Image (cartoon, rainbow, N blue to C red; front, side):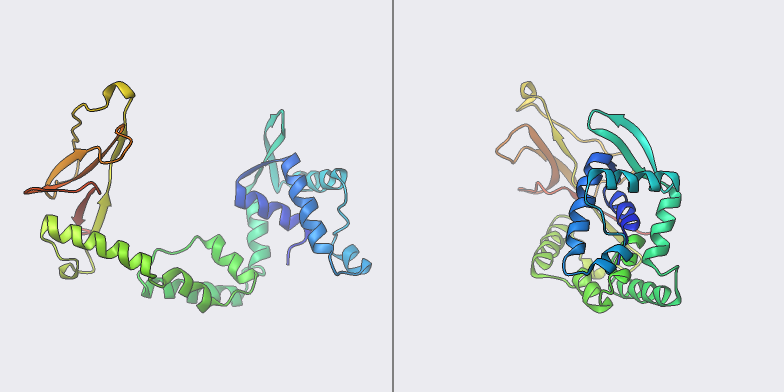
Length: 244
């Protein structure tokens, strides 16, 4: 549960920068929603008596005085505000119940599920927010790690291209290998439409012969693909590398 000050800094964490005018709009809307169904005593206790721009400005000034936020620029739309290191730490402490043992256990279990699923970890702030809102850990991790039908189609498509153009079967690679999919694209000026475009690669061994084409209706777009025999692709190329 946010209080007005932690909600303010959480907005700046999510959106990086905000003007004070935009921040006031968001605060007024949030406070109005939070007051619904609550008695006057609870509204007073939670500091939800935010009804005007002046109330919001007072809260912003409090955050500035506490060095939770800082003014980075002054524009015609108002002051640009940004979260400080102190503000981020304050938010982290709030979201994790002061880095409690319960949060540490939640984070460890969350990350271990991602490791087992061979998925990249989520940002720590995302895990903190899930913990703070008491999200069920298995429901959340299943959402991010479950291989949906659309994901399976994309994976199957790339595995097919990799095998057809390079002869490499994905299942034959060890866990220590990485397959990088690179798809360079170029958008050219109108007077260069139809001109020949070549691609030079530095630092990577070309897996097969590369081809550059303009397969889209907008012929100003060129994209790299692979060429094998009479077959051309327009979906980039693959580099199979081991950590060593």
